[in-house]
Image (tube, rainbow, N blue to C red; front, side):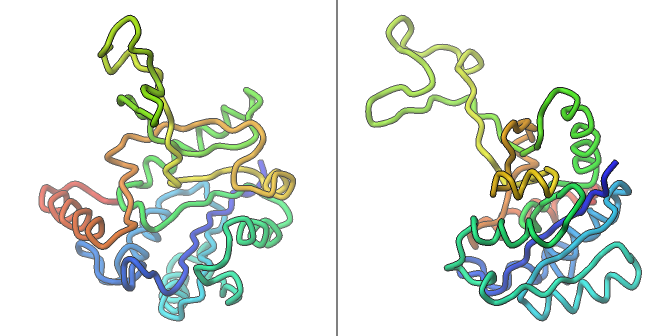
Length: 235
C-alpha cells in the first residue's frame, strides 16, 4: 500500500478567531494544535504527518513535538499561500505538488472532537471503498431536515403530505471538512481535494463540530472541559 501522508494546514492570522491554532483549549496549553497532534499520534497507519504553516509559533511547536514523534514534520508555507486572499484551488494545487507518491490524509485542527478512533476507522474504510471503485473519501454530515429554497421545499414534496416524517426526507450531505483522503496523483488530475468518484463518509454531527467563529471556540472549549471532567478522552 502507498504511504499515507497526514496533512494539517495551520495558516497564521485568523481574522475571526484570534490565535485560533495555539491559544489554550481545554487542558491543552498549545490549544487545538496540540490536541490534534496528540490525536494523530495515535493513528499508526499514518506514515508521516505534515503541518503546513506560515506561523512561527506553530512551526516551533511542531518541531518540538517531532522530537518525541518523529513522523511529524513542520513545513514552512510560502507567504503567497498563507494569506486569506489565496484561493483554495491555488493552495490545493500547491499541496498536490509537494508529494510525488502516496495517499493524502487532509484534516484540520479546528475539529477537536474528530478523534483518533474516527481517523483509524476512516483509513480502514478507505481500503474498502477503493475496491468499490471510489478514488477518494470526504467526510460529510447527513442532514435530515426540512430544507427550503425561495421556491419552496427543496428536499421533499408537500403536495401529498405537508409535513412528512423527518426520517423519510431525502437526505442531503454537508461537506464538513473533517477529512479529505485521496492519492496525490488523483488530486493533481482533479485539481481538487475530492476525486472523480468520492465516497461520502458520514460523521455524527457531534463529532463534526468545528471552530470557525469566536463563539464556537468558546462553546467547544466548554464542551471539551465538560468531557474531560467526566474522564472522556479527547484523543
